[in-house]
Length: 88
Image 1: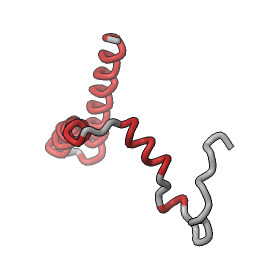
Image 2: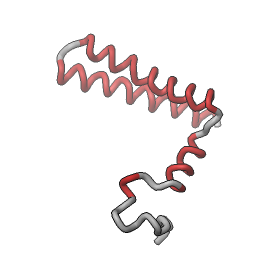
Image 3: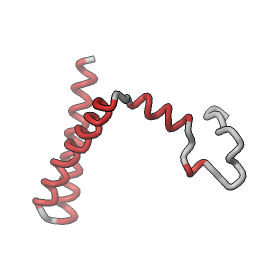
């Protein structure tokens, strides 16, 4: 378990660094890169905090998305049909 958490932090840090380098490469502005590098972890922290405060989990959110189809699943004549099972 500790190794998995350590790997998660490593991959997250690697993603932040590589994203910052790409922004630096394309925009050639270190301030924009710093904004990206700081905002990625802050956005993740804010999302996790909002889930925790509301008592939700990612599992509940993914179940809710599967259970209640979004507008992309609906067509003009499909409102009375059930959503197809994922295995079909």
